[in-house]
Amino acid sequence: MNRSFRLFAAWLILSLILSACGSSGALLSKQVKIQLVYGSEKQEWLDPLVQSFNASRTKTEDGAVIVVEAVPMGSIETMDAILAGSLQPTVWSPASSLYLPVAESEWRKNHAEELVAAPPKDLVLSPVVIAMWKPMAEVLGWPDQPIGWADIAALATSPEGWAAFGYPEWGQFKLGHTHPEFSNSGLMAVVAQAYAGANKQRGLTLQDLSDPKVQQFMADVQLSIIHYGTSTGFFGTRMFERGPSYLSAAVLYENLIVAQETKRLNGQSQQLPVIAIYPKEGTFWSNHPYVILNAPWVTAQQRQAAEVFQNFLLAEPQQRSAMQLGFRPANPNLALGAPLDMDHGVDIRQPKTVLEVPSAEVVLGSQALWRQTKKPVDLVVVMDTSGSMAGAKISAARASLGQFVDLLDDRDRLQVILFSSKVTELTPLSELGPKRDDVKRRISGIVEGGNTSLYDAVGLAYQQLQRDGDPRHIRAVVVLSDGQDTSSNLGLDQVTEQISALGEDPGNAIKLFTIGYGKDVDEDVLSSLAEITGGKYYQSSPDNIQKIYAEIATFF
Image (cartoon, rainbow, N blue to C red; front, side):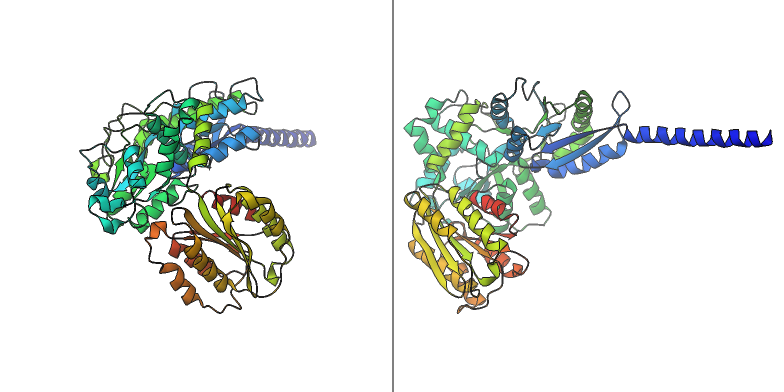
């Protein structure tokens, strides 16, 4: 009896343990994960909110704990990945609704259902503005006189530049905006320029884009560009660090101006005040739509969870936290106040004119028109072919350089210089179109050997581009090296002096982009050389060199 009882008790305890484990496993597995890919412009706002929401263990109606994975990515990059199927998020939140017609049009080519089944709600708002130094804006009549793209075009084409207004020390007018095929603000800038050229605020058509007056207007604006790029934040950082000698103005989001002015007012920046110009012809909202995708990989439970997280983001506390970062709340019930005020360079009564989001074909047509009218580049590529480049390094470098050449336009001018113990020219600075195939063939035959004359090569590239480059073009040098200098006649101090004492204003000077290729490079040297010129340094390897070249191409 005793023995039977003990056996029964052991069986009962074991059953309870197994039951508990099963229940615990069920509880642990009762989660619903949603992935949100979003425009990185709002990362500072979203990151802490995602952490807070996940910590709250909020549940769906059926009791599943919602877990949010938020991934910041470029808006156009994200769209392309979703359309290709290589990225399958639950929610997509680009910086602007301007992408949605294009995404929908491309999606419907291969799917019966719409990608965006219902109009998405906006998370936060920030108008696209022209950030300009306050003294320069005042010369143009701000705040009493409306300023817009027509004024930018007139300044860009004026041979006198700021001298026409009595300020010759400011030099030429210098504008920056991002690459419209890679960046939200750049795309909105060129569509806004097309609208301004057509003298419209809505109903932009392909016929408008073919009008010579519209084409000339966009070409005039582009004359003032110092270079393009992928990141709106990069332009803001460069402008606010380097001051009016580097950029007179840049196309940014209003919240970036609020952030800069907050730093200045707090004594963290010694720069001049910067203000937001809301183009008189009209502008777009960067409205950050929250798009719950109607895609086959999104389940009904994930949609429900995504709606719960959306309601969390739109609640008053979260919207107020966005305001402190310079965003305008999507919640219309919240009154706007500091730091959204004139003390921080912005005007909440603006924008007075909001442009209509055009059709997908017009958005793509505006990108194509920009391609026709953009500022050409005079580019020198300087490539290390020393003996340490043997094997996978030289193979990947050859292939990626050939692909880089394909990213340049026929109107661009290209020179390629190779360096090892000696510096040799692979092709002279001339228009790429007629020689593209020959350049790619020559690149495919590059071989390695010898020492590393890095400083001699950089010095020669700068001297020749300074002599032969067209100052009306973007001028840049791209240098790839896998090691430290071992055989140059020039020293680092001499090269530094050459590239920093060209007698030009920094904005229109030659930009140097350097690529440290491998583990043996002197990153401090390559980084400082790029920084002196207003360029950028990249750390690379055979695995990602193609991606690095592709990003550098967006500057042109």
